[in-house]
Length: 115
Image (cartoon, rainbow, N blue to C red):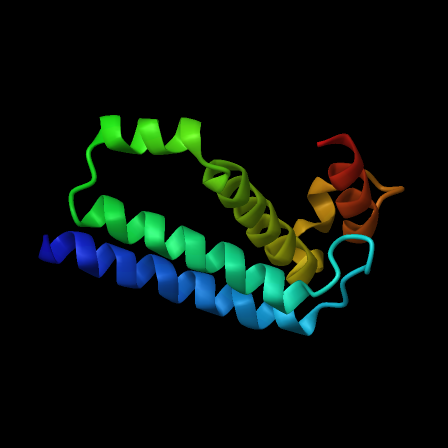
């Protein structure tokens, strides 16, 4: 149990660092009306889920929760935001992975439209 809580702490520290980068970025209003509020709400749900698993939530309980709630969609949304924040915060590191005619912002718009 102690190892699980240590892993939760480590994971949430990484999310907190991403939050700092997220808040520094400019977000399109069409993407969401209040970026910081949205990020906080999905992080809260993610934290609750991770803590539940660390405290012994069984796989069957997790599955039942996943088919009854909107939480899985919100977790996917958070993971997409974390990935986008990482790419946009360190665009030079990822530039070689993007097609030459695209930048991180273009990828974001494309990813949002086609996902």
